[in-house]
Image (cartoon, rainbow, N blue to C red):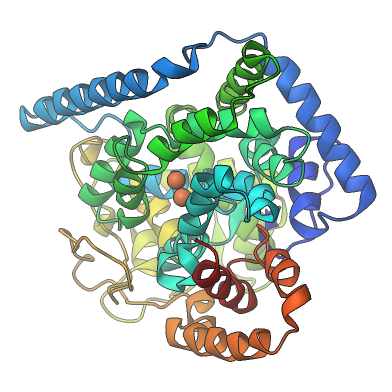
Length: 478
Ligand SMILES: [Fe+2]
Ligand SMILES: [Fe+2]
């Protein structure tokens, strides 16, 4: 099963599961029943979080020093990593390019709601104490500039490498996204927890630095990740504002200890579900390949001419039952169609997919799917962890892309612009944002701000209307 993350009908997930909360809070956040389910989800996650250890100090006034120490520590660890790499150590995270592209897909449920937890503080725009959080939210939204909006950036990143059709994922892949969307709509009830979650999320992690470095090495635009290294930094960025917000909200009259305990519990929510490093560690090249081919077989089973036999079945017969995919791969190896652990160019099957002339199976596989096939066929022939082979990459430069590619697409591989990208050309989006802005400016003053805030919700801020609303809001709120 494949789901189009933001547009789809949610795959049948049990009510109250992270996946179902995620989809319902994206699609219908205002429905009473969805609110209730997300409230209960949040309560149960907070209960789970309360049993985890916590490294955040409980005294608010040492938070600044702590943050600085943590950032220095991360910096030292990253320097040690770079040193190891310079001495010839393999990549620490991504064994091959397909591994990295799969990672982009599997963190997508979280990245496509980047910043969502801060949405609920917008109605407090007139209260100065909220300004650091509001400013952070506006920056996540790129102040309404499509090329700086983090969700737009991530969507474009996925589309650029043909990764935008997401595979079926486990409930744990949706935990963080579901938490972020739940906090977005429960900000009044869970403000201390929201502030704590924000502090944990915006603290610069080592994995962000290594990810950006290794993506670049693999010929994948690291801009989305490197952007967060600068923007989330502890001296001026989101992390500093996150710390400032804790101090701004400290209750003067009631119990500050109780407040800080709630902040710490929100901070621990960051530990739940699958994080970036869990997703990296559990990658299994063959499993990913088989899952992709099982999905593809649904479309491929009627298009091959019937007489072609591989082993004792026709191609259509092989593709007719997804459970046969592993055997099919085995038979293709036995018949010499696939020669594993060699240059894939010597495998006849690979030639059907990728050839200097238009190959028979041109366009059947997306760039990321081709990469998966290539890396699996190449096997030990590639020094996984050191070699890089770029199968197919879109070479058109994207707005906001800061880092030029070090690697180029393989000689002779076809250049293909994914269909999804053709739909949304940056210039078209810019034009419709301008058009929407004109419309929004006509709104009566008294109701305008609420209307703008509605359009800036997690599922809407990356649309033309949402971007237009964000631009107007940003210009009128400090
Ligand atoms: Fe972000
Ligand atoms: Fe951030």
